[in-house]
Image 1 (cartoon, rainbow, N blue to C red):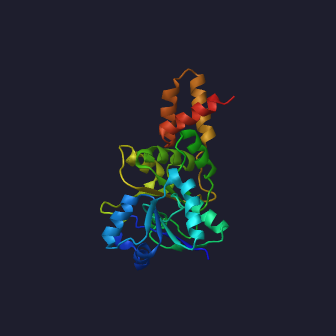
Image 2: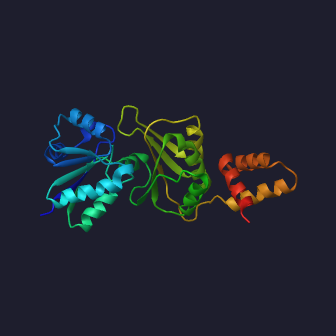
Length: 280
């Protein structure tokens, strides 16, 4: 008979947040596939658990090949546990490929629920949580990011994003441009850890706060669009910049002045003006 694949939720900060079931499954599984084997062993030591089975690495770069190996192990009737550095496997972390292959192979797939930065941030944000969507990491390139966020401008559900600390300020600026600087949001940093911080406010205000630099694991929660609310008319801003440039004003000065008056990030407006002018 086929084995069992267990997707195990790992603590996002405090080791004490794990359930007794996680201790049991780490001790009894035939194979534990970990995103970072060193972190797994540190977690096991913190929990006082001795891992009984074989430990293998399972991360983004080896996921495709390793998933095939693990499916064969599952077909042999073994129990395989997948655990990532934090949160649930498959949620912006390795796990999706193996889960899909296991289902195709007729293997039982189950989850061991655990802490999640997505729902934790949503709960402490103070924003509506009855309907929400998870958008993962925004694209890294400014153009791709602007287009993705622009497509979400009328999303009525609360939105949850992950972001790297060194890109947080630019992402918040892009969100302020796409959604408006007054759209309510919360930046959740180091959730459940010693230096946990939740910063709430408008996107424009949060972008200014993040500009000097922010450290730690970041989750951003943004309020959804409310039909009828005042929207940022980006076409009008670009047209105003173009008008001033046509009258002889330097582009940088025009962008800075228009952005300040509209309460949007200068850099993001400049990028938008540049993209529009480059489009034939």
